[in-house]
Image (cartoon, rainbow, N blue to C red):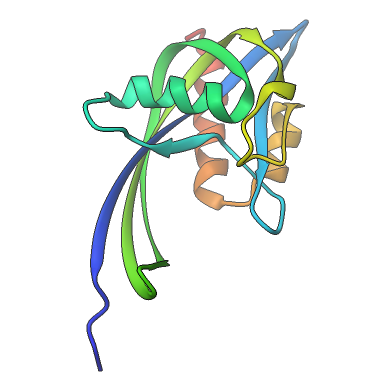
Amino acid sequence: MPRIPTESQVSAGGVVYRKDGDAVLVVLISVGASHRWQLPKGLLDAGESEEETALREVSEETGLTGTIRSLIDTIEYWYYGDQGGGKVRVHKIVHFYLVAFGAGSTDDHDHEVHEARWFPIDEARELLAFKNERAVLDKARDLLAEGV
């Protein structure tokens, strides 16, 4: 049986938030053929820091700008993908940051995203497609409750 090649990827993204009275709203993006809801994230460009990537990806995928308040968490997972006509096993590391909303419109997201939308944080948690991203959102909620 042929060995499947393995590669590593490092990405960064953010939980963009704003307060509306007592409510905390966060932005999710809808992507993929299944229109799944997830947090904005993407691969680091050469020479780019994790923080720079997080802000760039947030801007590209949501149309919003903001300020990093804190690292929320670094998650790791494995998945299989296609590369050059064959299968590849990917070890993915993603750094997620808490990003305070600054400016912009979710209508200005890029072509890779079907939709970017603000949700109350509890509703967003239920919509997220991935368990590890729900855990990131829980940690973001905790940081906000601590006044970060």
